[in-house]
Length: 115
Length: 114
Image 1 (spheres, one colour):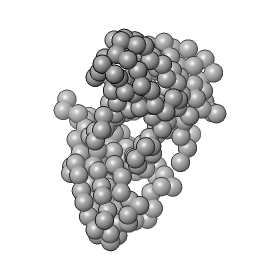
Image 2 (spheres, chains in turn brown, purple):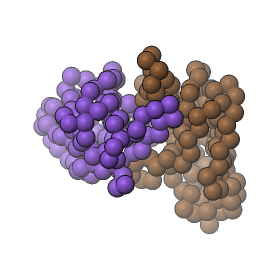
Image 3 (cartoon, each protein chain N blue to C red):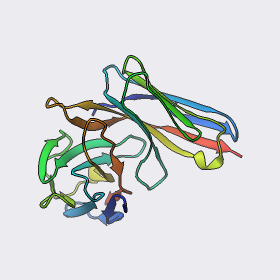
């Protein structure tokens, strides 16, 4: 199935460093969401973005909905060990009838933090 | 608000057996989605319900798969004659719908077909 282009695939960083990851698509989306998934668990919602250009923060996390509606990025400031996990971007389009459709996910960015 | 729950969390079965998974959405969420996630990949959409109506099915949902949401509350996903390629994490998500829809995921059911 279709997936978004998410990069980087993995990151090894030192505790306290800032992290940046992004997601791109060849087509536009109406909504961008960022999830974090721990091993053996379901994705947990971090940030939802509904408007092009929107910049939203959730604690140390900041995400932006690209102006072209084809991309989004997520920044994590001052990383801590519990930030370890896999981060997924997901895009959503409206159905033909105007309602929101299913999510299309990237392949994830695996974050490892060295204390 | 107890969140989305799924049962069982893990299932090991032999090839050819049938399995059924259950999802209980967040109460008052009228939309319910099923996704499948294989190792190293993001979740992929299988099907979704608005109340009790199944409105969309992905091409990934072969005829061995069937999903129901009989009363618009919990949902079941059945896989008949399981194959080794069915081994994956099966995720359920629910939402209230609307223009600013946000899907909340359950913990998933990990299926291993031997």
